[in-house]
Every structure is written in C-alpha cells, then in structure tokens.
Length: 394
Ligand code: AMP
Image 1: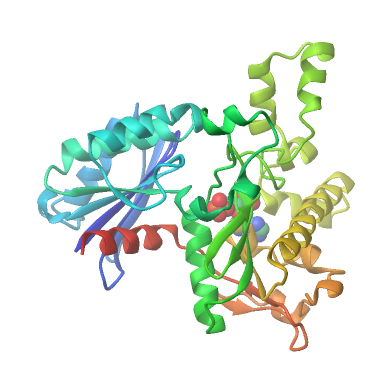
Image 2: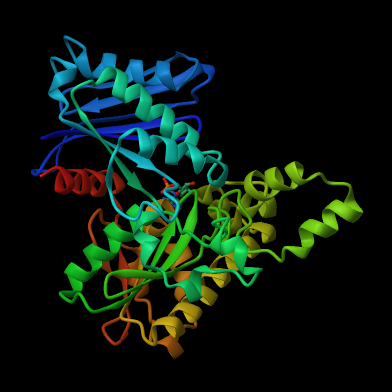
C-alpha cells in the first residue's frame, strides 16, 4: 500500500511517500515559506534530489507542486495519482472527540474546522491540505491522525483546570496535549527496547516545540502542553509556563493589547526572548564562547524539564526510563547533560562518554549503575502516521 503522509503547517507542507507494511520510503520532501516568491521546494528519492526556489502563493499551489514532482516523467516516483492508495494527514487538534486515527468524511472536516480556534496556526492549514488532497488524489482514502489523540487517556484530575465547571463541561476548556504522534512512537520504541510493556516512562520531545509526557503502561497520563501548544517547557519562541497574572499586569499597566501578548508569548519568548537566538545550535555556540545570557537560558530550560521529571515521577509513583527525542533531544548532548545532572536522588545518572557519542538509532546513555535508563530515541512521526493509517485500512 502506497501511503502519502502530509503534514501541512502554517507556512510549510512536509510530505513523505511510504510503501507499507515494508515502511520503505519512496520519496520525501518539504515546501517551505509558502506565501512568498522565494518558497523552497525540496524532493528526495532514491535516485534524485531536487531543491528549487519558486513562487508558491498558497497551500493549494504547494500541493500542486508536490503532485508535479511525484508524477514527473523523469524524476518522479509514480505514474498516476491513482498509485497513491491512502493519504495520512497530520491534524494537530482533534479535541476530545477524536482519540483515534479516523477516516475523513464531511463530519470530520466540519469538526476540524470547528476546532480551529483551539489551534489557529495549525488546524486551518491541515484542513486545506485535506481538501486539496481530496481534489487531486480522488481515489485515495483520506485519514486523519491527530496530535491530541495519544493524550485521550489523561485522567480528568490531570486535564481539568480549577476554574468554574461549566467551562470544562460545556465549553471544552481543558488540557488536551500535543506532539502525541511522537510521544507514542518513542514510548513504544522504548518499551520494545526495555522488553517490558508495564513501564513508567517520561518522554521529553525537544524540538522547535517542546513537551514532556508521563506514560504509564503505554498510556499518556499527564503532559506539559495544555489547552494550546504553548504551556509547559521553554521552547524556541514560546514561553511555556508563566503566571497568568503577568498577562493582566501587561494589559492594565504596560499598555499591551491581548493580541500583542499572544504574539509575544508564542513568537517572541522562549529561548529567542531570553537570548536573541532561536536555534539551540547558535545558543550552545554562544554559551561556549562565554555568552552569559545564553548559558542562563540553557540552565533555565533544563531546570524546567527537571521539575517536570520530578512531578511526573511522583504522578506515576516510579520511573523506569526517560526518553530524549526530536531535534534537540536527539542531538544536543549538552542539554541532556544539564537535565540529568544532580538527579541521583531519582536514580538518574548519565554516562558522559556514552552521551557524547552520536548514533541514528535508539541508544542508552546512562551509567550501568543508573536504575533509571536514559534513552535517546529518534522520533519518526511520518512512519508512525503511516503505521496507523495502514492499521486502520487493513
Ligand atoms: P525539530 O523541531 O525536531 O526539527 O527540532 C529543531 C531544533 O533542533 C532546531 O531548532 C535546533 O535548535 C535543534 N537542533 C538540531 N540539530 C541540533 C544539534 N546538532 N545540536 C543542538 N540542537 C540541534
């Protein structure tokens, strides 16, 4: 079965074509900076690599460009759009209704639209991706894989906020959780590695967005992102946890509007707000050259993660392994070191030499004596989506 995975973001479309169940990647690529005259389109297959700068005005044109590349008579990988059997769409917000991978129909599309106010940067773009794919790949089955789905098992005591009950009961104000596809994938890999399904795991996804999940016996039971993907850990441009009184103070005394604060907390805060840099590689290199702001920001970032590890160990009454994943979690030995140092009370002891080694597969970076395993697990959201689509359709 040829499954095309589409991850439609606010200004980008990532795609990957996989043959299932072999999980062979036929091609992969990304269109970035949609809406500009210098959008970048990249496409990689076994035999070809194409990168081009071109004008792509909207997602419709983006998906048309992807289709052209897939069908290209010389460098393409399929002969007809009918060669695509199914399309797996990453959809960020499925609310409390969609806790499973779902075949898309009109009702599902209406729900994704209705949930857009809860994920304004993502759900509208996801919906455009679905509608375009339906128009182009007419014979393919369209499936939605929701980022929130894995967190459907979080108990009410963890997902409800202590605000008047009707907001939860009637208006859907609650913690939903995000990055679910990644947390599910890496925790299953970790359980397979540990050869044990009855585990207490903490998965730490550190990429452009960052989140942490407590996973007991394979199920998410608590998670750092909440109502929207802005709560919790310090991220590239997002603040993570702050005291909400700051918002009222900024409105009442500092002359900010609510939309300015929204923009500030989501796009100008986090590591960018603290250091002037968003990419962790720049921050690490500045810190190593003595930039104190960058060093402090790294320490703040690690300190926040440590606090969540403590809280989630308490929530699960135990801990077998912590998992580092995504761009920072997989690649930054410094961030892993800062998080794991002085954690011997929790039986978390990092092996510095193992931590400094690089590898593209799952690996253990704790000392032999460390009771808690420290695992680096490369995430693969596309493969997880393809597996879920394949399972649903077969
Ligand atoms: P992701 O969202 O998973 O693609 O992660 C993107 C982030 O990973 C980038 O913003 C970088 O900060 C970070 N990153 C990627 N490679 C490295 C590296 N070698 N060292 C430190 N951080 C990295």
